[in-house]
Length: 188
Image (cartoon, rainbow, N blue to C red; front, side):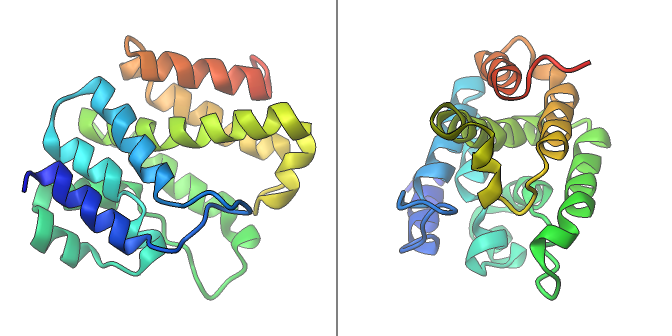
């Protein structure tokens, strides 16, 4: 089985029965969407596989060592770049800002275009969902998130657009930037 097919099968099993936050949508649709987005930017099997697997450590109790053993060091590094320290002993709302700052520091400090692609795949999939909900609910949609402050959410999503600007010639980045502006406005 090729790497991407193995990663998809692994992700399907790892996320089995999970639902998206406050939704009845099967969780697996999100990493599959992220993988498809990455596939629009590259044919690199490691990057597409990592996009499919990007949430298994954070949300499905899979270890980075398991990822490396099954998919190799490169996929592990890419998945690790997307994995937050959730600080399970603390309420998610109280750690939101520090977790996002730590995550953004990965983007600020990388020269790896693959890391940027996997990040953009994930965040564009998120932004598509945010935009759909925003069109229906407006700003009250943020009440179901750990971070309810729209200004904080805008800071985070705009920062990602800025830090992934090296991909600005891709349709994925252009769509991400457009959706971010539709939800949060053009900003400064």
